[in-house]
Amino acid sequence: MNSLPLFADALTHVLDEYWLGPVTKYHLLSIIAAVIVAGLMIPLAKRIATGEPVRGPLWNMLEALLLFIRDEVARPNIHSGHDHHPQTRSDKESHSHEAEEAHKDPQHYLADKFVPFLWTLFLFILVCDLLGMVPFLGSPTASISVTLVLAGIVFLVIHVSAIAHLGPFKYVKSYIPQLKGDNLAMTLFLMVLIVPLIAAIEVLGAFIRGAVLAIRLFANLFAGHVALGVILAFAVTAEGALSYSGGAAAIIMGTALSVLELFVAFLQAFVFVLLTSIFLGMQLNPEH
Image: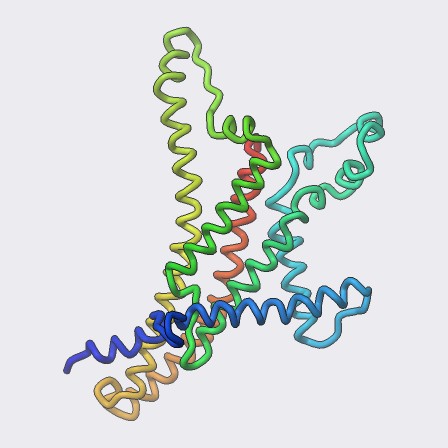
């Protein structure tokens, strides 16, 4: 039996294709995901702005997700450089009202500036992941080109924000370790060989972190959908099912894997945003 057509049919669920001229399936699905995110966020934001309480299971679930991202992801990982250093009364009196509010609730000082970005990122990735659960559609995040664009956006936000927050000189200095030897020879050895090597590794690490974001999201979504497609293909083909019991087993396995894929959709969106917040915190506060 030739299994290549069966495998090709399973791959059609995760491979991009042209739908309307030069417009591909993932182009349209990405636009649909953006419209869905806007349709969820704008009404919720208007309700919160007017002070109207959130009602209904959908809006309560959405608010709970967003508050979780803010309180358990953004604020613990992104903070200002003085968040964890208590100040004396005289110090506080010399600061502005904003700094005093930051001292009262330190996590609000810097993290909340990035919360809207993290919310948008989380919801967009989640909706893209969930679109793959709809028959005949697919997950844009199962395409490496889509995840590379998302990782590129995160990379720019992290480093542009770090330059704006630290200043160009301190930003560049954050990649250069401060090493000093016990004697002149050791100091020269460290400055000439070790410091440039570590600085190069730090710069390379910044790009590697961006690549990790793209590859891990793509790999998890792509592998899961391919496995699900292959199992379901066995259930609907005579070559794969071989018997009623084989078809039933394939359907049960496909259903179980679909539930797992639903969990993975939420998990991967959460992990992507969690890593983004950690990388933001690392870059904005190199002294920590």
